[in-house]
Length: 56
Image (cartoon, rainbow, N blue to C red):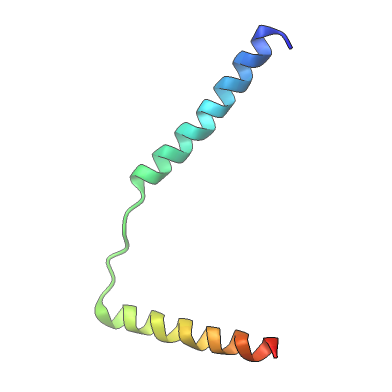
């Protein structure tokens, strides 16, 4: 493989990794109230129960 093909592959991989690292660094936690967290946990429990019921 010619040297410029290696260069293009390295640049492409670097761009992908750089984009992923930038995305990770800029991710922010979602500030949720206790009530919202409670509703989310209840909904997850309901969905888990529903999924377990469907698998039977």
